[in-house]
Length: 413
Image (cartoon, rainbow, N blue to C red; front, side):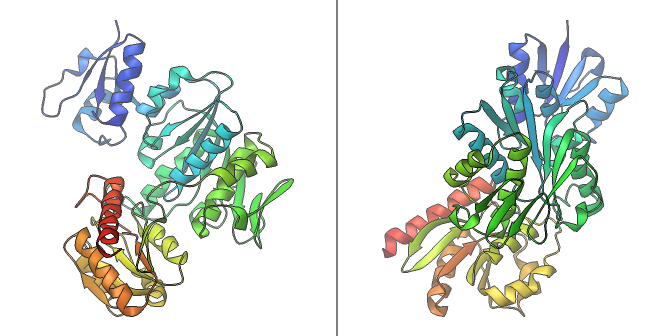
C-alpha cells in the first residue's frame, strides 16, 4: 500500500491531506526535529513554503522518492481547462478577475493556488466543462513537473523575494519557468525582463504600444472588441495592466467581448489593494497593505496626485532608490515604521519630510496630523515591504490599518 509524507502543515499541506484522505492513501505529516526514515515512504508532498534545499527533501530525492508540489499533486486529479497567472504584482487581482468573469457568465469555475485555496481541495470536483484559474507563485512553479495548462500569464517581473533567491536573475528564472507548463501565454510587452519571450505561443499586452491586447487612449483594445476603461471600477495604471492581461486570458479561453465586459464591470476588486477605507475631516485613507515590494509601491504612488505616505516593514534587501523622484514629486510627508524605517529614512530624507514611528497606531495618528497640517487630502498606506516583522501577513496588517482608521473616525467624526 502506498504511503506518503506531507512536508508543511499550512494551508497547502492541509489541502493535500484532504485529497489523500479522499483517495484513501496512507500518509503522515513531517514534524520538524523528528527523525524520518525515507525508506518508509513512496512519495512526498511539499508545501511551497517548505525550503527546497531542506535536508529531508534532499534525502528523499536521493532515495528516489517522488517529491510533488501541492499544485502538482492536485493537477494530477483535475479535469477541464486550466489558466495560470504569475507575476510580482497584480496576480491575485487578475486571478480573481478572470474567475469572477467566468462565474458571472455561467461557467463552472474554480479558483486556487497561491490565492489561498489549495488546488488539492477542489481537484476531484473538476470535470471536462470546468475552468480552473490558478494564481501561481515562483515557489509553486519551481515544484511543477508534469503540469500542463491551457492559458498562462506573466504579468510583470520586478525584484522581490531576494531574501530567498540569490539574485534577481534567479528569481526571474523561477517565474519564467511557467512558460514550460502552458500551451499559450499572455505576457507583458512593456516589461524588459520578458522581451525574449517570442513565438507563436506568446500573446502580448501593452500600455505603450500596439500588441495583441493594448491601451489606445482610454480604450482597452482586444481582437474584435474594445472596452472603455473609464467605465470600469478599478482605477490606476496597475489595474489597467490587470484588465488587459485578464482580458487576454479570457479571450484565449474563448469568451466573447460582451462576456468579458460584463465581468469587468461587475468586479469590485480585492481588499488591501489601493482600497479606500475611510475619510476623516476630509482626508481619505487608502489601504494598500498588499504592497510588499518596490514596484507595487511605485504603482500605488502613480495612482495619486499627492499623498502622505506610510511605508516600511520587514527588510528584504530591495533597492528603493528608484523611488526617489516619485517620493519627491508626490509624497508630502513620509511616515516610516518597521525594520526598513532607518534605511528608508536615510534614503529619502532629502526628498521629503520623514517621520519614524514605532507602531501602526502611531503611524495613522501622525499621518493624519501631517496631512491636516500640510493640506493634503490623501493618506496612503503602501508599505513596499513584507509584513513579517510586525504581522502574520499582509491581510492582518491591512485589517490593523483599517481598525486604526476606524478608531480615528469614531474619535474625530
